[in-house]
Every structure is written in C-alpha cells, then in structure tokens.
Image (cartoon, rainbow over all chains, first blue to last red):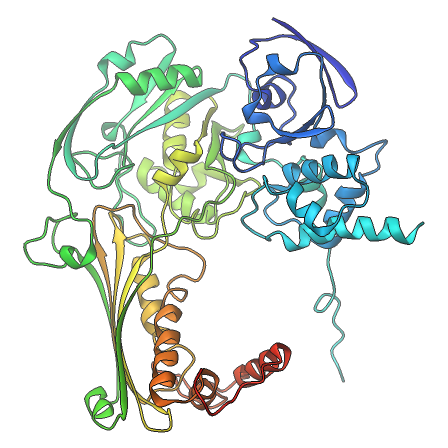
Length: 156
Length: 423
C-alpha cells in the first residue's frame, strides 16, 4: 500500500505494509531511531510521537492508520540548528539521566505546550502520565516545563 | 587556603545531554548494519526439568542460518562470581527463562517460527520455591550439592548476656519481596567481526571488561580478539551486571561472520535478567529501660533463585548492615544465600543494604513503643557518632553527621512532638 504522510515537515511516500507499526516504520524505513521501544504495549511512553498535534504511543498505531497525517518526532524539534525550548529546558534542569524515556517525555511535553502554553503543575503531570522514567524521576522533568511557563509569564 | 572548586556545588550540563534530547544517542537497538541477521533465544518454560533438545526441523526452515545450543559453546559456563550459569542449558533447566538455544535467521519472524519448531522434551523434576524449604536436607537440589550457597557470620560480644540484662526485647520476622529493575531499555545488542577481525559486541552493559572476560572464556579465544562497545545504556540499576545476550551474540558473529542483532521484548527482559533478593529477616533486639540497645540477633535468609550472581556480596552486605546506623555492643548475625528454582537474584540498587532497614527500623519503633519513649529519642540515643564502633569492629573516625541530619529533618518537619511520650 502506498502511504503518504508528513514526517517532521517533509512529505514521505512509501510502499509499505499498512499493518506495520508506526514505530517500526519510523525506525526501520525512515531511520528515525530517536523514537524508542520500551514495552510494545503503550504502557511506557518511550515511543511517543505527535500525530496531528496529539501525543500517541507509536507502538500502538499502524502506519496504515496515519495515512495523510502529520507526524512529529524528536528529530523534528530542532529548527535551523536551534533546539526546541523544551529540549533546552531538559538540558538546563538536568531532566535527563539514561535518556531512554527522554524523547517520549519531550514529545508529550511538546504536545501539551502546543495546545496549552502555560500549563499548571497538575496539567504537566497529566500530560506525562503515560511516560515512565526509571532513573531521574519526574520532578526535574516537571521543573523543566515549569521553567518554560515561568519564563513565558515573566516575558509578558 | 581554601580549595577552589570548579565542579562541586555547581550545576553541570551532562556531556550526553544534547545527544539524548535530540534522539541522536545510539542505544544498541538503534544500530542497523548491512547484511544484518537477527537472533532470538529459546528459553525454558518450566522451572526444573531434565531436557533433551532437537533442532532438526527448525534448522530446515527457509531463512534459518544456524541454531546454537550447548554443543556449540567451547566452555559452556559463565557467572559474575561463580560460573554456575550455562550459556545454553545442557542437561537441566533450573528456572523459567533459562536459555536453551539461540536461533539466527534472516528476519525476526523466521526466528519466531524456528523457536516454535525446536523440540524440547522436558522431564520435569520437583522444584523448590522458598528458601526455607530449600535449606532442608531432603530438598530438591538446584545445583550439585547443598542449596545453601553462602553463609556470612558476624559475632560481636555476647548476645545472650546482652538479652539477659535487657529490660525489653522485640522479636519479629520481616519479609521483603522480589523486585525487578525494569530499566526502560530492554536488553539489545549487535555483534559483528570488525575490520581487524575482532569479535565485536555492541551492548548496553555495566561491565564491558567482565563481558569481554566471559566471552573469551566461553568461546575459548583471547581477550584481545574481542571488542565490547558500550552504547548508550537505557538504565541498569544492577540489572545489567550479569551476562544476558553478550555470549550468544559473540558466538554467532564468530561462527557466521555477519552482523547479528538481538532485541529482547519487555517480557523476555523480565524473564531473563536478575532480581532484587527477597529476604526473610528474623530479628531479636534488646534494650535497657532508657532505650539503650544492648543486644541484637538477626537471621537473614536470601532467596538467590537458580543462580548465585552477586548473592555472596549482597547477603554479606545485608549482614554487615544488619544493625543499621546504631551502636549495639552484642551482635550475632547469620546471613545466608539459598538456591531455589525462582528467577535468579543479583545486584540491584543498594546491593543488600536496602532490605534490612525494613527490619531494624521497625524494631526501633516497637522497642520505643514498649518503653513509652518516642521513636526519635530512641534513635538519638543509639545512633552512630564520630568514634562509634560498628558491629564489624570498624571505628568511624571520619564525619558521621547522622545526629545533625536527623535534627535538620526535625526542624524542617516542624513537629511539635512530646519527645517523652510515645505516639
């Protein structure tokens, strides 16, 4: 089946088995290995990508289901060599340890900030409830998003 | 003159932060090579059985390159301290998840098909699943000889006399459970022969040097013919200290001379790697009328499952830390590691020092309650200070800021405790 979709602002057209998982399509067909596989059943959130402004577990989506959709992965956040504000905040706050949850965490936070520029702590927690971290814990990750919100408020 | 500190006390940016927020960090599963094959492991479905394995039908499947079993391994053993694991089980499986064979094929689906077609005949034998039963003379034996694989003894003073002079004695048994590290990145790796002819394994490991030693031993080649490349590690917490797929991958690359990739599923990750030792801790602690500790006895039994892994070190540490941070003049500790047919236990954050606080801190609370003093007072009375002697006879000559720490906690908690009464 010919699949046409936008991935990180680029049109991608491939002849691919529509029952292939979006995760495998990204990693194997497009070589976008920044999206990670942790549990294969939508529990851990390491494979989170954004489909049409919504954070989804790409291990639970088939590529045939996203035909014509707009996909954003961790590789698509950097613009013109400039890191996304969330990537910067994660670095500054030390919200990274082993790094395996990081791409998924960042994509969940990105989806949140896309529709809600100034989320509350509860809203931040809710947005990453589907992402597991086993090293650093969640405090620094929440703080990283809070820092963005604070900066936005201060700049007003 | 004060030392100027460039790093201590400052927030430093991790060197790998940039690669990790951009998705560029390479974990073993992110490695794809030309001409690459895939590997999958056949694991025991039963906890204790004699086995015979027939791979003939599976070998004839289109796309299957080779199936490795114990016959293909020059030295079929490994283990971080004791070489009690087999690379592939030869006669007997000792736990669910024991590796029996390793299929290499052109793709993962063919690997799965081959796994189904390998015939394993299990002649099940009685297993033993709790360490207390396993310690009995007539218990089924997990390995040759006794199931008790380690016994650490600590003796200080005379506990009998200590209990005789005690005003109050607490005697209780505490149990902790098995825990999985659940590191977020399941085991994965890629092996190949590099440009200098070395067997190369890309893996996420806590011990690249141990891995190299273990591969050299199993394959009967020298260490300089092996290269371990430690990729980004998606969490470990002790769970990547034992061999998982390293020897399987090295063996396959050496024989087939093509790149081979293995990625465990979350389920296989859970089934195959070590756990935190569940401990049974029988404690007897005595104190005088004022709450001063006089004697403690602890019998600690650790279930190490089918393999030793770090059991000796973990149970020794549990024994050494059995008193907690409290000075006790008379101490007797027996800390024992026992083989069972459960998942094997090994290193996990704390390494045996994590479980005993469940016991000794509750003992403190119970003694305080019986004496009618509050739990903080009894701790203040007994805690290690500079110059204290531990149960192992170590004099703590350096900074021991425990009292300062507890006081600071109390300050911040702003507890208006009646420090004399129990609550």
